[in-house]
Length: 229
Image 1 (cartoon, rainbow, N blue to C red):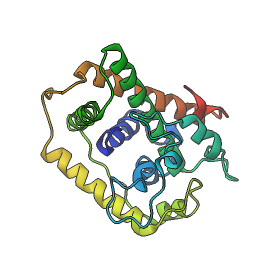
Image 2: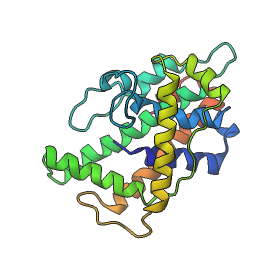
Image 3: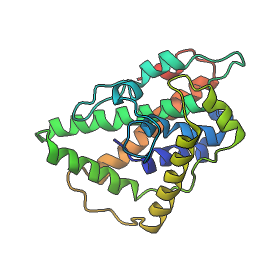
């Protein structure tokens, strides 16, 4: 799966190029947090969380070798606007996270098939190492602030209940990732183990464009904004 630095880089690219208003984002901190939420309760990213939720429930995908989360199903379940005519920024961010997970993993599965690379533990480790290296080539600077508005949206998050302490711990983890990405930033193409810079760079643009298209469709009032494949 893409690391949180990659998810945040997508969010930052969208905000920098389009702006929150054009994308239908009311609260940037909530959107940034939403981009992390699907991983919160899986048990890998945040230590000492209050509970665990199965991957198949947080990502709507079977935890296969390289799973492909069904972001369109997440949209169908949770993407309906509320009484104010808006979808919560947490849901928009979570949807964006699942779009990224789906596309990175789908394209990686295609890459493995095209290059005759067999699945297995070694391949999985190489894939994740390459994702991590690529994440360190990206510039990120934002982590979500846990404001009263963010907590208000957390209290009404539809997919599953969110604990305030869990949210605050996720924010601390993200702050550490931002610092680490800056301190260990890679200015040159790293020595990837399996994937290539061309593959990862083009994939980053593809995912950014897919998320952008969905959010712009949302602001335009398209009822099927999150089902675009």
